[in-house]
Image (cartoon, rainbow, N blue to C red; front, side, top):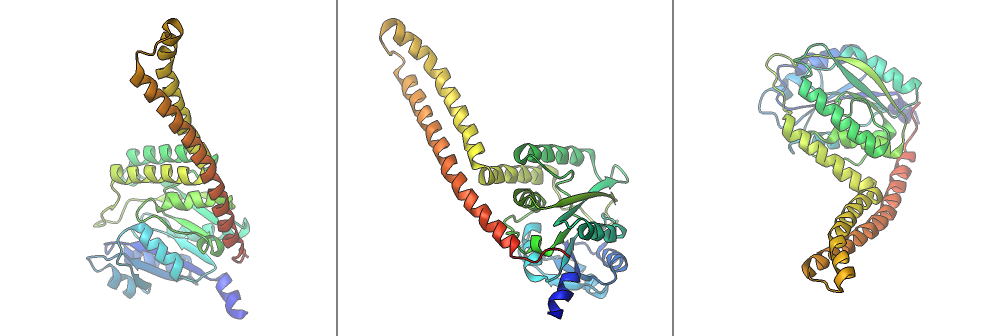
Length: 312
């Protein structure tokens, strides 16, 4: 019983990193100072530099993850580390360690399952305008789909309750993991809080692994995939409506000609229009079937969530 109580009160700082030798020692020291009782776990994603050795010398518990991609790292983090509260933060030195106690206290006081640190950049180089615009577009898209969204869905600095972490099935492999985490929280309608934190430039010698267009497209495709999986009736109804509209537009001149002459000279167009309308009907039926499946899956996710101990 005592072991369960200790686990419920414990804090684990989870730091994913790849080739962050220039920043990792300072990140470990800063979070150890900000959260003195926390266990600092560094998950090294097959770095080719001395990241793992430097993190170990700084006092962190170092884990190796050979499968490349941030999503793969987070999967191992959530599966392997036992704690009551989890602080997830990138290892590049851009996030403010001094804000960690405030984030943890917010999680406890508001009895939340996730607290998101929304980035307030201190310079243009820290958070480039293109990234700001991309984040806003993706956040707006997610808000439109699910009716609710965090202000910064791509933030890599978050605090979680144990029941959130242990009920979250990580499916993503790369940087789209933040989007998937946000969608999981929105889908289960768990309590979420947000608070602004400083966001600084990367440490000198540390190179960003984010590729704006490639990773932005992957995140956008992830949102579309999650839209089709979590809101199948809406998704396939939109496809059905589009197909039906095209079918009607194609059929109008055929119908007018038939009404005037009793003939169907544009026979291929009539076949195409009929086929599109059948596809619209099939799309609508698929949406209805998948919506039933999604409801069942969502109930199972909620049961797994409720099976975990609530935040204390």
